[in-house]
Amino acid sequence: MAAPTAPPLISPPPLASASPVDVEAIDRLAAQRQALVEQIARVIVGQHEVIDNVLLTIFCGGHGLVVGVPGLAKTLLIRSLGRALNLTFSRIQFTPDLMPSDITGTDILQEDPNNGQRRLEFLPGPIFANLVLADEINRTPPKTQAAMLQTMQEREVTVGNRTYPLRPPFHVFATQNPIEMEGTYVLPEAQADRFMFQINTGYPTNAEEELVVRNTTGTESPELQPVLDGAQIIEIQKLVRALPISDEVLRYAVRLVASTRPEDPLASDYVKEYVRWGASPRASQYLALGAKARAATSGNLCADYEGVRSVARQVLRHRILLNFNARAQKITVNDIIEKLLADVQPGR
Image 1 (cartoon, helix red, strand yellow):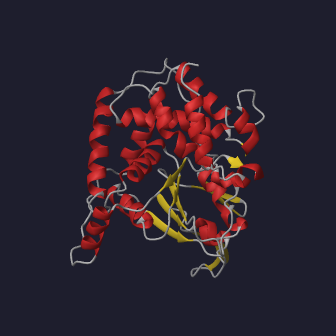
Image 2 (tube, rainbow, N blue to C red):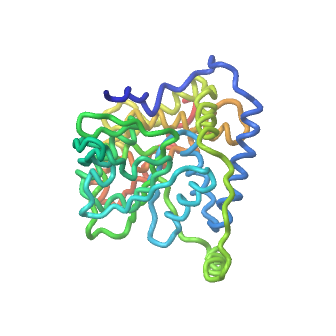
Image 3 (cartoon, one colour):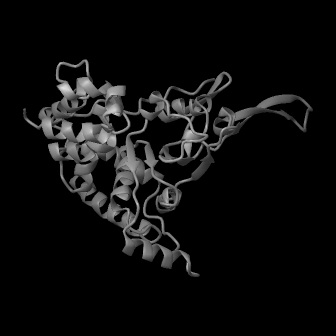
C-alpha cells in the first residue's frame, strides 16, 4: 500500500494572531546557532554569509542551491554541516550518464532462501538520507534532474506502484559551477523553484586564503562535535513556523514578488522591459518563512520588514528570467533585484 501523501513543503504563514511563541526556545535557538557556527568554523574559513544562509535554509526546512567556482569548499561545508547536526549524509555526484534510479533506488529481484520463491525488493537509493548533497547538479540531463522534483516537494519517492516516505528532516543542497558550460544542462525552472535559496559563494580574502592553506597543508584534522540532532532540528522548524508575521509584513513580501512579474499591475517599466518571467508564489512563501527564521535566530518574537529584505536576494535571484533585451544590454538579475528593493519600499 502506498504511503500517505506528505504535507506540502510550505504552508500559509501564520499571522499575528498565532499562538504565543516559546520565548525560552527562541533564546536557545540563538545559542544553538552560535554553537553550530563555531563548529563549522573549525573547518570552514570565512564564508560567514554563506554559512548563515545555509543555516537559515535548514531552520526553515528548505533546500539550497549553492553556486560558486570550484575549490570554494562547497562540498566540505555541507558535509561538515551534516556532522555538526548529527544527520545521515549522502553525496550524489551528478554526471551525464546518471539515471533516475541511481538517485531514488530501484526494485530488485530477490530469491527467498527458505522457499525459493522470487519477489521484488526495494533497494533504497542515496536520496534516502537526512542531508543530501547533489554535487554539480547541472551536469546531468533534465530527465535525471526530474527525479529530484517529487523528493524535494513531497518528501517521498515513487518507484513502480509504491511510494516511500523520506524520513525527516530532509534537505537537499545542490552545487553548481557558474563558469564551466561544456557538458552542463540548464537547471529546469520547475526544479530551480524548489530551492528556497540560491546561495552564492565568493573567493576568500588574502588573509583567509593564507589561513586555509595553513590549515589544509598540515597534519591536524579537526573533529566536529554534534550540536543538534534530527529531532531538535524538527522542533526548531516548528518554532520558526509558529513565529507570527503581521499582515503588513506579509503584504510587503507578496508585493515585492508580484513586482517581479511583467504582466502584474505592480510591475515597473524596467521589469516589463527586461524580465521574461517573474517569481512564483513560492517566492512569497519563502520570503515570509525566511523572515521568520531571521527573526528567530536574532532573538526577535515576530518577523519584520528587514527580515524580508535580508533574504530577498537569495530567494529571487534564481526565480527571475531575463529576456533577450536584458542580455543585449548586459542587465543582470542582480541589477533587477537591487532596483526592486530600492523602489518597492515597506508601507507604500
